[in-house]
Every structure is written in structure tokens, then in C-alpha cells.
Image 1 (cartoon, rainbow, N blue to C red):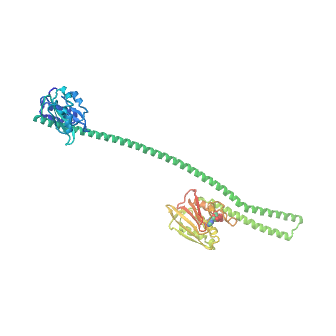
Image 2 (cartoon, rainbow, N blue to C red):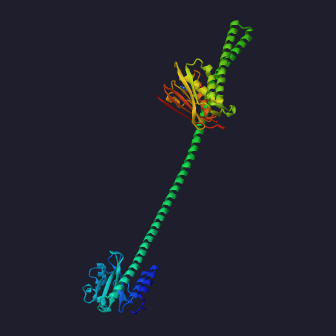
Image 3 (cartoon, rainbow, N blue to C red):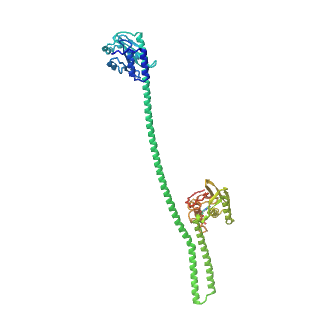
Amino acid sequence: MTQARRVPLPDGQAELLEMIAKGAPLKETLDRLLIIIEAQSEGLYCSILLLDPDGTHIHPGAGPSMPADYMAMLDGFAIGPLVGSCGTAMYRKESVVVTDIMVDPLWAPYKHLVEPHGFRACWSTPIFLNRDTVLGSFAMYYRDVRSPGPVELQLIAVATHIAGIAIERKRNEDELNRYHNELEDLVKQRTAEMCAEKENAEEAVFALQQSNLELANALTTLNVAQEELVHSKKLVALGSLVAGIAHELNTPIGNCLMIYSTLADQALALGEQFAKQGSLKRSELSAYFDNSREAGEILVRNLHRAADLIFSFKQIAVDQTSSNRRSFLLDETIKEIVLTLNPRLKNALFVIKQDIAGGVQFDSYPGPLSQVLDSLIENARVHAFEGRASGTVVISAGQEKAGWIELCVKDDGVGIPPENIERIFDPFFTTKLGTGGSGLGLNIMYNIVSGVLGGQVLVHSELGAGTTFTILLPVVAPKPATTGVYSTSSAMQ
Ligand SMILES: Nc1ncnc2c1ncn2[C@@H]1O[C@H](COP(=O)(O)OP(=O)(O)OP(=O)(O)O)[C@@H](O)[C@H]1O
Ligand SMILES: [Mg+2]
């Protein structure tokens, strides 16, 4: 060992505290501490052993003058009640002074380890963190048998104090690093979790977008299919309308043709008879005149019937161009419409009540609206109260939602059987065939509401209790004609 230049202890202490404050490595600080201490006493060798935080195993901390192989050999030793000076001091948590290693029982198992190096005395003092926690031990070795004097005791006090500060600082640093690393790991883990969550969320959003797209496509397909269905339904309706018109006109026009050809035959026969005989009997002429008058009456009746039918058919094609659009107050207009119907209803046994919200301004077509009400009230007269001595028709109107009015025509008549309800809007569907019904009234009404007025028709009927037609109307009628839907419902009482 080379004896270092002797640094006065107070200077040495100041130097060491500065090293600790500046964060010098622990090994460097402890080596310097031991060199300064060793320089204070002739023949002194010092070592510091560190105790693991597990409180059992030791590791060499510093021993700059001690034999390197001896220090290395101590690595991993477990402390105990009979483990040399240091192992015992840390175990007992008190200083252990062995004046002669060769005879002391604490060293019995280990004295052969120090014998080659010639050490005889070994005094060891625990380095404390606090009263209970031991950080390590500071040992002083001499090559002669001896016990500590006041100088050595002071060196021990200084050395354990400074070593305690240095080791504690290192432990705190380690602890701090551990926390720091743990925190970093935690941050990394959380970041990874968040990234994964973000990816999951992005995937979910993507999946949602995909399914939205699919839904949008499905909706488009559905709309196309619906349009096609409406179109094909319209074609079917048109086909049956044309067939119906042909069928209906066939009877009066066929009658006219037949009457006319009969009359023509009779005229021809009479002409031939006159040419042959040069004269005609009064009775023959009178019969011919009677026939002609009768034929003329039948012809006129049938032509009127045909004209009436053609007039009805024309109503089916009501559209904006043939109707007058204007602003009007709903309640006033409905009052006027009902007034115009009065002459036709003067023998009717039912009463009409009105419950129309006042002040509702319409920008629509009063003519077609009047046709709608006319058709519904006429139906009440002809169908609802058939065979009844009294009844009531209530016409009510109120706001349904912004810009829309719900107009109801409700009777407490016989109702419509469920099997008929789906067909009442079909052209030529009537339960009064041959007794004046053409079955066009509700069809025309439906076309007017869904076309020119831009609304919808719903019907609800209960057999024996009455029928309600509900008509949803926009207060501002659309400019172009729109397609409406009708829905029907019925309930048996
Ligand atoms: N308020 C009602 N009560 C009971 N049945 C009704 C009522 N309104 C309509 N119906 C039934 O619906 C059928 C179709 O009515 P729609 O007005 O289309 O034809 P119609 O009245 O028979 O003939 P048209 O109106 O062409 O003279 C009627 O024949 C009738 O059976
Ligand atoms: Mg009718």
C-alpha cells in the first residue's frame, strides 16, 4: 500500500461532502473517504462493505488499500451472529471490536482467509440509514493486535457518518431511477395501450363508415325498387283504368248503335213499303213515329250517360294547369264548399258539423279541394247512412306539423267491410254497380289529394261505427305534381 498524502480531517470531510453534493460516483467517494481516513493513522487499512436492501447479503463497497482478491472473496457473503467482525457487526447492529483475529471465535471459520495478508486486529462499525436500517459496515484493519484509542474512535465516527450520507444518496438516486424507469415503462405501456385503442377506434369508425356506405347503397337500391314498384303499379292502374273506361262506355254507345240500326232498319222497311204500295197506312206511320220517338229518347239517355262518364273520366286528369291556384283561408273556404252542397243535401237525414281551426292560410287549389270534400260528403250520403234515419258527418281540420294540416271527414255510418277497404281507391270499385255508382269518386279524390294538392290520404273504418278519411295537406301546395301514397285500415266491431 502507498501511504497517501495526509489531508487534515476537517479538509477531507469538506472535500468528501462536496463530492457527494456534486453527485460523484459512490465508489469514487468511498475510495477517497478511506484514503483520507487511512492517512490519519499509521498501519491502518480500511474497507467498506455494502449490505443489500434484502438486509442479508454483502458486497464490497470500497477498499482501495485492501488486497483485491480478499475483497472480491467477500462478495455475496451472508451476515450472521458469527461472521467475522463485519458480518457480525451488521447482524448485531452494533460495533464489533476484534483485537486479535487469530484467537477471536467470531473469526474462527475465516481466519485462514486473512492470515496470508497478515491482518490481526479488525474493528467494524455498522453504517446506519436510521436506527433500524443498516446500509453497510466500515472496518479498520491493523497488522498488530490492538484496540481502538480516542483518535481511531473519532475516525470511525467520521467515516461511518460520511459513508452513510454517500450510500444513502446513492440509494435514493437508485430509487429515483427505479421510479423514473417504472414511470417511463408505464408511459410507454399507456402510450402503446392508447395507440392500440386509437387503432381500434379508427377500425371501428372505418367499419361504421363501411356499414353506413352499405346502408346508403341498400337505401338507394330500395328507393329504386320502390320507384319501379310505384311505376309498375301505375301502369297496372292505368291499364285497368283504360279497360274500365272502355267497358263503361261500351254499354251506352253499344245501346245507341243498336237503337240506331233498329231505327234505320225500320226506316228502310217503311221506305220500301211506300215505294211498293205508293201509300202507307196511318197505323203503320203512327207506329213508326212512336218507335222513332222512343228510340230518340233511349239514344239521348245513353248519350247523356256516355257524356256523364266522359265528364267523370276528365276529372281523373285534374292537374295544376286546369286548376286555379290562390291564397285562401281554410275555414272560410270549407264553409263555402259545404254551403254549395246544401241543395243536394236538403233531403238528407244526417247533419254536417264543422270544426276547422281558424286563420289557417292556404296557398293551394280551392277547386280540387272542393271536389275532394264533395266526393267524401256525397259518399256519406249515398253509402254511409244508407238505411239510417240519422247520422253525423264531422269535418275537422287542425295543424298536424309545421306547414301541414290534417283534414278529417268522419261519419258515424255503416262503415266499410275489411275486404273492401283495400279496394275503395281503385277505379271502378263500387258497391252500387247498376244503381248510379261508377266507382270513380274516391279514385279521383285520391288522385287530386296526392297530385295537385301534394298531400296524403288515410282511411280508417269500423263496420257499424263509421268511416274516417284523414287527409294530410301542405298549406303550400307543391308546384310540380307529386306522388302520394294511400293507406287503409279497418276494424271489425
Ligand atoms: N263513407 C262511406 N261509408 C261506407 N262506404 C263507403 C264510404 N265511402 C265510400 N264507400 C265505399 O267505397 C266504394 C267506392 O267509393 P267511390 O266513391 O269510389 O265510388 P261510388 O261512390 O260507389 O261511385 P261514384 O263515387 O263514382 O259515384 C263505395 O261504392 C262504397 O262501397
Ligand atoms: Mg262516390
